Length: 381
Ligand code: V47
Image (cartoon, rainbow, N blue to C red; front, side, top):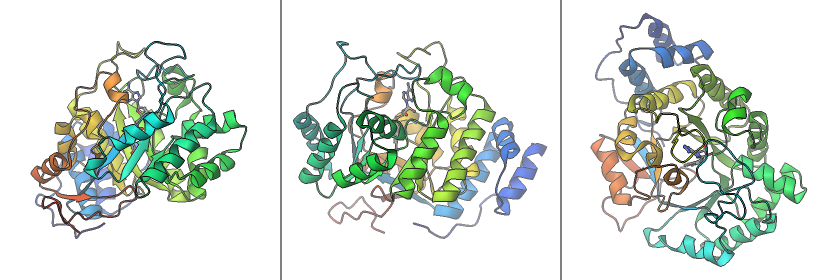
């Protein structure tokens, strides 16, 4: 969805000479390179970086700001991996481990359905014993019970793991998922692609190249997906720029990524709990740099669960055009100490957006506007 960009209220100005050259490219609509990305991270003039990102955001979307009404389902937290970044996973046999029976997962899906959910977001641990059929049955059962709800399920890491366990190729695995009713895929598991970082934060996961190759195959099979980046731990500015440029390269080839979601690391209850949490300006700058580097991504999401609603709202003026959704029951961040609510209503999301001077548009997972005539607070487009 595009609306006409409004004329800029203030001209671009900066006291940072290094940013001038980057700004000239942004204003001319030219693609930014690696060194431009570093300059954006290192500029002392974060408001000027934000101005540029907002300029691009308004050029692409005007004031429109997306959100959706979704529900997270995490069928199991049992995981063979022991990623240092994670507070969610448990080993088989751990008292805090859980695995939902299929009926239980379907019941979980049904709770919160009164909010007229349009998306189920399904991710979980890499369970050592659950067969691929469990996940396919889970999806089939959801489709039977909620035929209109879009199923965004299984990260590239899960797809690669399930393929190995089922002794199938990635293509065959994707085909089986499609037949069962998976509609698209979430962006998790990307973390930071650089091997020297990945080996510390998530050495049990597929490597960055495999994540990108799996996404490429998924897009070629007709799935849309999202992409994430986990920042605020041991990575450098250069690692972040490298991560985003590698995503931009795949996007150039497939066009299959819908949204980029930078995720701030939450250290509590992880093996990296000595690290500090990110600060507000780091989060805001990350949103802005994402908008500026990822010129072929339509959307940048300020995931309110991770950023807090207050910072996510500010991000709407620093390059973000999406807040994610009602979520209903977030677990991954809350196990890692997040103090945000576990869900929000449509009304609350609309208020955040409106008070940021933006126009809320409820979307489905594929960014089609959802009209709810019975709810006056929603704007039909
Ligand atoms: O891949 C795990 C991250 C991701 C921690 O596609 C952590 O629409 C911070 O990918 N601190 C899962 N982050 C969540 C995710 C996501 C969320 C919302 C929307 C979408 C989408 C995708 O969460 C993991 C990892 O990068 N994560 N542990 C932690 N301690």
